[in-house]
Length: 304
Length: 227
Image: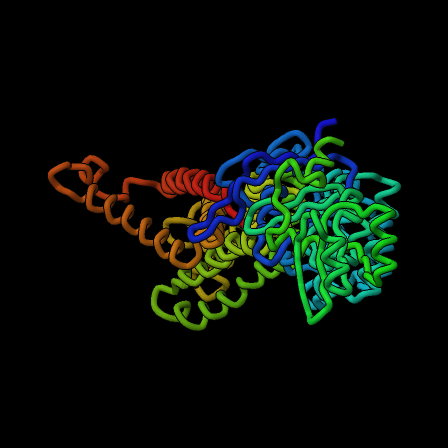
């Protein structure tokens, strides 16, 4: 199967810094992928280049089989929800009407439904919307466009927790009916983790983790308890992080734990907590995970 | 639906901007009538220029206001530019016809009963109504495209870039004037010694050629604009 998005050796340099540095990745069609990373890691630049809003300095970018920049064959099958979208001086309803002309799969009913759910009135000027309502409008357009490739860049600045949950639910429901390729950047990682089939972490313009979400579950475990017992369990394992407080220690070890080890941990009074996606991302951004082929998590997706 | 037409519709999704345009006229007419219109010669045609300036500003605003969302809606920069230029042409035709009609009316009423010249711009729009329509349309379109180009330059290179753009144009004009008036080359006398040899229609042709150059310049500039 050809990937919906494929990027090879992509570099984007600005005058004083390199936003993306030799990025290569492939995203299969019909998947929801999380794009994670710290502020300024290059997530927005990557999404902007994928959407044809920005141009690469070097490297190749293919979306739905072609380069996206100035290519309407690709662009009309692609939706991009930007955090900082600038709208003309129009009303919400007019923005939706304009969107309906450009997206071939536009679903007006879904759009009205979503706006109603988010409590945004169509006769309101976009300029007068609150930050959260403006995000809701972006999300509405992104979902109702039903584009084959949908890119969300921090789509929910200012949205309350209820509205965010609503967005996740609607996204999954509509995705089940009309599968598409979704790439989604967010800082609320644990909240959105359940959506992701795979995860890409970038840091300082480089891909530091590219793995199936399933492969990441239980990939690392935090072992905390008495120093001696913790050290005994961590013996001979790859360790990402080690903390010590008096006689207590807390260590993050890589790899699954056997039933025997779990039993030993229980009897020694040691706590075992699998690392959440957010904690894994923190480790990845801190450079704990080297993007090398021998790390088993890395190659999971390319093999699949 | 053709993408260019979609873009033109998108530009018009809030038509207020374009509908207020004709309302500039009564105001400049009023100012013209009470000032220059009362002085000897009754020539207030200079006040009509604000109408053209306003139209150029509209062209400029299409970039800053409408381009970012158009790109998000999956429209390419090229299509946005061509669609918006198409809209500019359509508006120029309609507004040019309106100016021509008012010009004819002004002639019929002997300057609105005040022997005043407002729409009959001497030399340029003082001929027949259809010549005035053609000339006004061409000038309006050129001004619109010129405004768009400014908007694009500003969005790509900011204030400094815009200043450089103005400076570059000034240099071109100065260089042209120097070259033409450099007696040794006899260019000026070859051109007939003045622009007087050029009829209003001839000048319209020159402006039309200029509009094509401006249109091409904007098209090249927008291709790598980012928003």
